[in-house]
Image 1 (cartoon, rainbow, N blue to C red):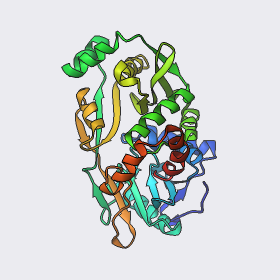
Image 2 (cartoon, rainbow, N blue to C red):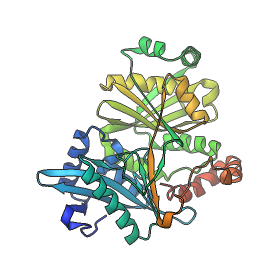
Image 3 (cartoon, rainbow, N blue to C red):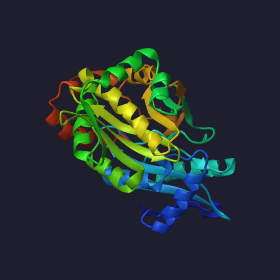
Length: 353
């Protein structure tokens, strides 16, 4: 994770994330910045690097009285999707986090220079401050879903539109038990099955374990069980006053039992008990069933703005499974035996970023 100084005159360098003092300084800056996200934290970069065997290059801009900006970058390498520097790797957010425009520009240029040194033909920034001219802007592919939590269960039910509210109420009579902890094995099995059914490869199991380890009490796994058997599970992050249900899914029995409905409603209750005020339902691709599901819960979609830059004016890399060129692969993946998908999937997914 170490690298030499990049641009000495402007105080830019690559952080040593093995240094606990360094991590604490960066964490404090991210926490205090209004636009900071959990994907800007050193913990996220470290978990991704270890869990997916990719390299972290965490840029820090120093000023006279402390840190003035950061940009967490993951060096992605995939034989199928090529090379890229991504901020933040495997996150839905990230991008440049800085106090002023000059620092934003400096971090953007440092990232592009670093990409050249690493033979990465593109840089992808998921949110954050605009890096300026020369970058492709995408504000149509993804939607974000965030809303305030209600005061209690009854108010939360009333905040959910009528049709979805009825589904949540029906789940109450399905003999479902809610368990919270760090049952990573059950979570991974259910999540892997759900993404296979969607036609996408699952991430390496180590990524989930590293996230739980790095975030400690700021992450957990909520699992829904029916007669002792796990049917739905979600791994969530807690950041400031918000809960981020990040990786969630259910097995074949989940739909009939309405286990996902019970899961997210239980997570809302748990988040309130932890002092959270907001529920960040994450991103979904525009026009998908996942986006419609979140809107049915009373979340208003907001466009997410991402930035990309590619060498010689080339188009940024595309790893979106909705791209028509991947349609045959997606359909084939849905039919793949689960054991095979779980063996091959992580090798593919660890290079997606």
